[in-house]
Length: 331
Image (cartoon, rainbow, N blue to C red):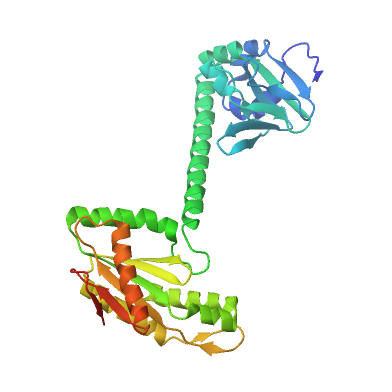
């Protein structure tokens, strides 16, 4: 660490006027306070502010750049402090230990202002106070933007974890949250709610005959038919394997029957062009049930699944309703 030997003030009027922290501040008004400050040249990696040491200083960058290293829940966060900017202002004002470690990013010349001198300067200069307010508000705004951006990325990650990467429909993780919420709403307001369970017929044969990539194309095609026939409020999910579930808010079993038949016929009439150049068609079986008083999500799904099983046992490519008295009715 190489100290500059200055007989008078540690910085010149020219240097003073270039610094953002002293913008519009009279050099003469603070010249006496600057006699209590010092400058030095710090080599790269030199620690200038250390949270483990109680010495508090306001550091202003004259040449070069510094790096502030702080810790949040994600690990280390780095920020650069350029010429004219400062570090350590929060600990000077709050009289607490620094929250970040500040090191020289490159060979840098800095002005070191002890905390008591910095506070005396603030008391002496209204313009310096305004500059500090501007610096602090900028820091707060940047930190707020970082928090918002981090929360946005977290939400994106959470949402992407609830989407089936193959079909683009939501997955079982999303189902647990959203189906439960919709079931509570429907039970509380006694609103109708219907559920469909859909299974691709003879899907194993597709995989065995054409390969798993063809099976993936079939899943994508069926999911697209489902998505194309949904209202914005409907809740289609890839339940697992070749099975899909759909919650239809405020839909009766008759409404659901119409939707189920539309989906079944839509899949049946949709040609699927495989990468091999072959064209195939598949069918689906559909089971439908309607919410009953005090149902849980699993209650409604189980009854729909029972209707689906009945449809598959009775020829496939069928829609079956599980009605109020637990009787199964093939459409």
